[in-house]
Every structure is written in C-alpha cells, then in structure tokens.
Length: 328
Image (cartoon, rainbow, N blue to C red; front, top):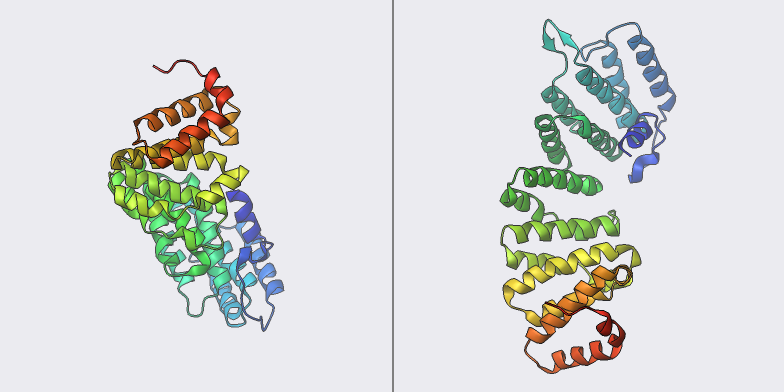
C-alpha cells in the first residue's frame, strides 16, 4: 500500500488523492515531466546531491507551479526532490566520511517545502503521504523524528487530518510498546476522529477503541466512559462488517462496568456479545458469553429490567441453555 501510494504521487497519477484546489491558471505538467526526466538521466551518470545546481531549476519551476495553482506539477517536483533525498539517505551515501543526507536534513526539507508561501494543499498532502511511506524502513529514532516533523506540518490543517491522526496513532503505539502507557494514552486521547468525514467508519471505530483501551490501562475510567459515547452501539449492532469491533467494544465496556459496580450492565454487554452472529457460529464463544450473561444476571439486583432479561433468555435461548455444560 505504501509503495503504491508513493508511485502514484511520483508518477503524477494520484488524481489529487482527495485534495481539491482552485482553478489552475497555467499547466506546467510538460515542463515538470521534462525536468524530472532530465534529472533522472543525470543520476545515471552523475552523483546528484541536494546542492546540485539542477535543483535550483527544479525549485524555480516549482514556484511557477505554485503561483499558477498547478498543484499536480508542483507536487510531482517536490516529491521527486524529496524522494531523491530519501534514496540517498537509505543508500548511505557519504562525502568525506559524513552522510550526505541525514534524517534531520530530510525533515528540514519537508518543513521548508510545506511552509513555502502560498503552498498548495495538494503539494502538502502529497508530501505528507510520501513521507509516511518511508517510515516502515526507518529505525526507531529516525521514525520518531519524521513523525514529529509531520505532526508539526499537519497541525491545524483539516485536509490532512486523517494522515495526522494516523501519525499520532503510530507514535502512541510506539510508546505503548515501550511500556509507557500514560504517555501513549495522553498522546492519543485528544484526537477527535469522530468528526473526521474523510476517515473510513471501520478505521474510525478502531481508533476510538484504541483510545478506550489505553485510558483503561492507565486506570482513567471516567475518560473511558466519555470516549465510549463516541461509538454508536446501534451501528455496531447493525453492521455485519464490524462484528469483531463490536466484541472488542463490549469487552472494554465490561472492564469499565466491573470497576463501577454496574453488574446488570455487564450482563447486557455479554448479551450483546452473545447475540453477535460471528459468536453464534463458534460454540466455545457463545457458550462462554451465555454463561457470563447468566452469571451476571444472577448477581445483579433483581429489578424489573433484570426480570425481563431473565424471561428473555429463558424464552429465546431455551435450546442453548440445555446445551451448555454445568458452569463451575
């Protein structure tokens, strides 16, 4: 996926990757293609470092693209330049024993290009997407530096809010892997993905579940309850593609309910897990969830709601009640 995204950007066939710009006043696509080809041919016979004069020509053309609102061509030029730097960094090219390209220099160039006056959204968006494709092959320290740089670049920019959220998640997961749960939860909990129209429903739900999981692990039950309200249980119940997320959601809520002493809510959570189609198809799973459903029903205060739940399980699940082994 990362490789295909990078290829689409560098070949200028990404169709804006979802970013819309204003009207273009001049098309520099042919000039951009010619310059990219010229540099590519030069690289076959000559070392083309960041100080090579040919990049002055590239930046001059990029400025014209920016002024003419030609985001596609500007993006192609900027991303071609940055990818050239990343290729040199990965190759470990050195001059007088010193790396030609350091991660620090690469990050500086990311910022410089994105902060240019009047820089187009298409260019910034494509630069961020390209840089994300580099992360998988970077060592931990370098990855953190690039992520922090991209976080600064994307801050306050709605058109790259999804990319920013993914970067924050990467950073939180790295902290979690180090055992720094407090830091991971703090980093992730402030991202309001529920307002992101561009993020897919499944990804959005997974993100919120991760937020819930981290705040629970650090014992912040109040915040877990607040975050949980961002997930629509009706959506989870009705979308067959989200069954695994439904189970994860109710499993997390059971931890919260137990801490708060909400026994009947634990019962209802297990009921929701039990009736999930994917659970019904696996005997060990429906037996476990039905046993827990009944156990918490017996432990809960026997009010009208509990009485109704007891009648429901006796009526609707009479056959399965006979099939489950003695619970011990």
